[in-house]
Length: 388
Image (tube, rainbow, N blue to C red):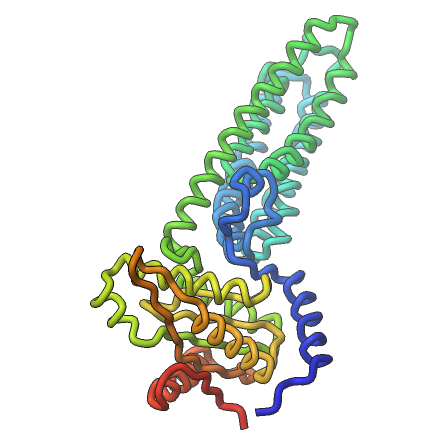
């Protein structure tokens, strides 16, 4: 086999980085990530977790929009009972405008699961009620004539933020969208009473803090559930189910990627001879070697037992073979300390293939699994591909 030219490899790496920026295929919650950073910003979240969180938010957002789209105009009955007819009509127009907007947003959320769309809709779902609050407050001459249900609106809107598993940054953005109309109303009705202004601001910050705490508690719980259901606790790699989802995402963004399947040779013998704790240590070492020899854009998963799978976006077959051979060589050359008296070396049988346009994932994995089986039949400790 003739190795790929270096220029081709560098070109593929550059192409892969560009693709990585688009779909962010990093392993979620790696050990190097600070849990606090993960709660502050979504930049370290994987595309898979982002999509799952977005679907969770989408369901709650639709319910919230539909509930207020129906309930907001209904309360106009009390406006006509309480206020003058012309004032009530003005409030009705504002209510109907908000209701129609909420219906439209609920419709958009129901029709699409796009992450970017959900971000825009959730921002609008808190901005528009805040603008509604500012609008209706402008129809009153003094703060004393405003019913408590209207003065409490910013705090009620803040409380709704606690329904969603948002990051600190996301929560602060929504709070700022509510705060600007709130402070505009406070300035509009300010009569020199700083104590009243202080109380209003203190109450706003109290509700904002509680909402932030609630949303972070939800996000933390969602993270823990995601880890337990998708991350292999021994190797910290994603599991088979997430791998298949990630490949589906990759297929929609790229036309070229390679798949490498690793199988540790005679792993059962290691377990039988040295015990399962030794086998666990071998799996950890093997997963570490695979991860460290691949880039952050590559997808690495524990496929089952002693099998690992690496998916290399924007990588042709030649380059994938070179990476597989490098990993096999490093694994073979590294003595693994089993106990004070024993150390062993491990080899691997590896199959490598490239994705063919529009083929099914089952077909792709059947081919790479057959190549892995060929490597074992040929004597193990080798890389076998379908290169012509």
